[in-house]
Structures are given as structure tokens and as C-alpha cells.
Image (cartoon, rainbow over all chains, first blue to last red; front, side, top):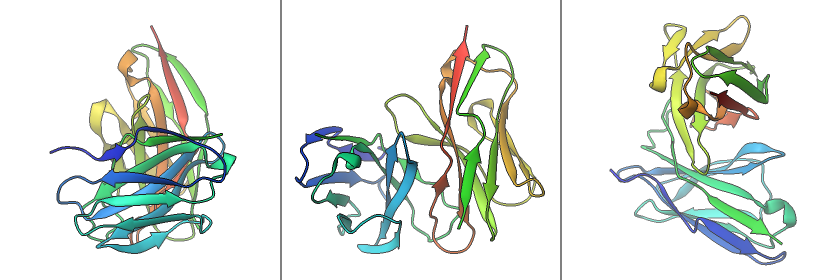
Length: 115
Length: 114
């Protein structure tokens, strides 16, 4: 089975712009979670989508949003970019049974640099 | 709310030496515990997880971890490391009830010297 894929792998934007990141989960996985990784704050949970609905949400401002399509692919959008949004954005997929014991499989990430 | 503290930000060891990466957590509810590894320019890969039962958990690549409820710790160990173990290691927790929402520690960078 192919793993979790994320596109693009690298991205450079300027302050005030918006950006959309894409994540394709492992075939058969219905849950997609997004994480932000920065040197200062570490790994932080953004949100989780299951069956095209946001099921769980972290503590990020409304500029961060996401959606999931019927084929379980997910996109994450950040509007009005700030310098502090520079980070590695990781996507993870799982079967989506809803149990906390599930294993999440991570993609390689999208590295976003905001200038 | 849950929190995770990884006590060492960097751990240098020699090849074939044993290693222990320390993790302590705080939570007012029951949690599941995980260790993930991140190799350079890659995403995270699950090493092992503790759900219930035996407190000694064996994972991939020869790693194991021991859950200690009284000390709220979940330390990761390997008896003999290899150069290929050079990576960043993350301890994470999630509450047992409800959907998974991982809370990660700050990570420990393991460097193996020949």
C-alpha cells in the first residue's frame, strides 16, 4: 500500500497570502489529522477530519481551516499568513474507528516558509 | 488536559551502547502512550504504544518502553544502538476516551557516534 502523501513538499509564501496544502491518506483510511511542527512550539494538533466532517480541533486561530473530500483526501488552508506560520505541516491518516488507540500513519510533511 | 515532558533535548551515545530516553506525562484522566521516531526530512513513524496490560512494551527496531503509572513515566530503551538510530524521538499521550488527539513532548535528538 502506498503511504500518506503530501503536496507540495516545500512552499514559500509572503505575509498576508493564503496557502492550501494537500494530503492523500492511505487507501482505506477515513480519518485525516493535521499537525504543525515548529522548533519553538514542537508538534501541535490542528484538527481531525472523518467522513468529511471535522471531528476534533486543536487551539489554533480561525485562519487555519481544513476540509475533507468524499475520497478521504484532505486539504488544509491558512489565510493571511504570518511569519510565525513557518513550519512543517504533517498530515496523518488512520482507519478512523474513533478509538484513541488507533495508530496514525504520518506523511513526510509540507515545509512552509513565510517571508 | 494532558502534557508531556521529555527530560533530555539531546542524547549522544556511542554505537552499540545502551540508551534510555526519558518521558514523563501529566494527566487527570487515563491515557494511552506512544513513542514516535522522526528521521531527517521524514514524517513520524510509530515505534510502540502502551494501551493496557503488561507495562513492558516491545516495539520495532529493538526498542522497548516501560510504563510506570506511579511515576507517570514511559521511558524508551534500547540495549545496543546503531548509527541508523540517529533521529528525533517523540513521546506522546492521548486520553483513552474519545477520538485520538495526540499531545507530544518536545522531542529528544538521539545522536549515535561511531
